[in-house]
Length: 79
Image (cartoon, rainbow, N blue to C red):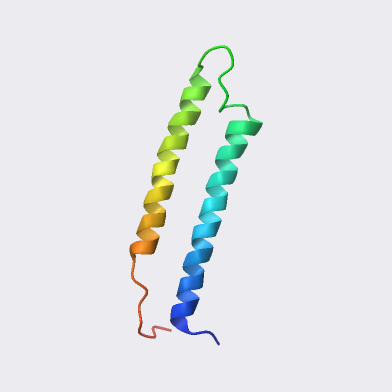
C-alpha cells in the first residue's frame, strides 16, 4: 500500500483541485453562460447579486483552502 502520510497529502491535493474546479465551474457558468458578469447598458440587480455571490464565495473558497492546508499532516499511523 501507500504510506499513510503520502495518502493524506494526495487526498488534500485532490480536495483542493476538486473544490477549485467546482468553484470555477459554478462562477464561470453563472457569469459567462448566463450573462450575469457582463454589464450591458447599466448595472442591474442580477449583476449586483452575481458579484456579491462571487466575492462571498471567493472569500469562503480562500478560507477553506487556507484552513485545509494549515492543518498539519500527522506523522503517526492512524489507520
